[in-house]
Image (tube, rainbow, N blue to C red):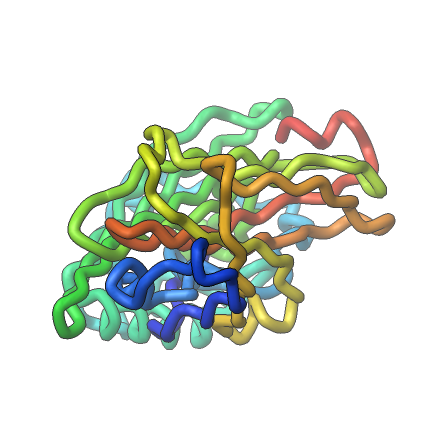
Length: 282
């Protein structure tokens, strides 16, 4: 489970012809290049061993445990949260506690919600985790939404392992929540070519927009870095890119930045890379 990283300034757009170049006023809302890569290291912020095997003897956490975890995430005492977790596959309790504290500093009003998810193909229960938060920095407001689907295991008292099945985070700035669609698959096969598309849902109506997309390394994800995303003028209302998955199982994380006169949208999406077609749907 993860958390948003430090707010950083949006990357400088590459030089465009004068007729196409946005004015400084047009791009002023573009402050966070942050959606880029855990653009939000959010949720239960765990950055390593996300695909580690789960302990076979462990059971799913009870409803009471999930309620306690939600209360701890929404509370103010790091020790309470840490006390509900045990180090194990996908969980570093101390690291999680530090990232949770960092997120609360960035988004003091952050709220977490845990709800039962759809069972996996093998009948294992899953948990939907959502975090929302906001902050104002100078004259710019930021609004965070992060979603994960998790497989959790418990020893009856503490959560001992997690498997991250889906993850997407979106950070918006500016006066309005620009509607966008992130059309990136949750899982792909090793070596597969697939589309990474992010589009504005509403017509641009002549607005000059810019955007960029880049892959994040596992080191950048683990360090919750906000890497620079190179911007280019967009003419089609979205970003469209065809990429290739690695030839070894694991994951890819994509960072996207869209700049519009009414605000900025930054997003990250984690894609599972699997070797067996049966694993495409958990």
